Image 1 (tube, rainbow, N blue to C red):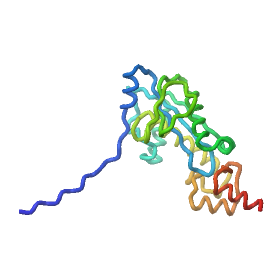
Image 2: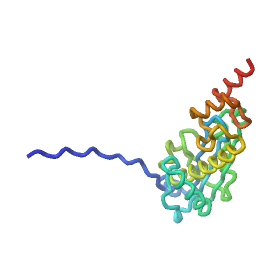
Image 3: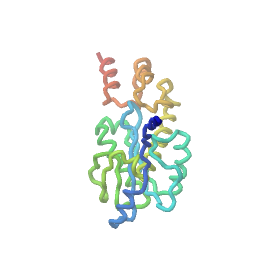
Image 4: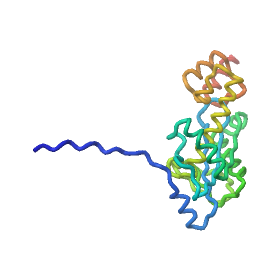
Length: 219
């Protein structure tokens, strides 16, 4: 008797939970805040950060890493998070990105988002492997935190939806670059538009594809 071959194991992507938040509360924290940013890679537009303190007893259903959600689901979750959590949102604009560099600008946007909260946090969960300087309370960096912590996932949704709306608005004023769909990221069509239409005030001049065009124009 021959046995049917075993089906390959299916590995499901991780789903964020409240493990890190619960651990922080067990150590005495009361207001645990997730922090994330979006927009480090684009050639245009701001970098946007969000800080979110969730109510453990009132978490929006279906909350997940923004990258794991459809645009429609992110848009549906956004008002729920805004209504049911403490939320701070902040940006660093193109001039600041070019002056500080994108890493420092991202960290500054995070600090501003934390400062914008209506409730002062006493513990921070920050997406990534690096903590910004001058944080107002104890913090821990969590690699791939948006896929592991519900608070960081909520921050990722808020930051993503907020920045996408900014880029769609800018696309109305600067048509041709495709910002309503590429959100300023260096897609093939965006880079082609840069060559055809030139550099706008919302392009990051410190980023190589933009800087190279400016240098070419000077020559």
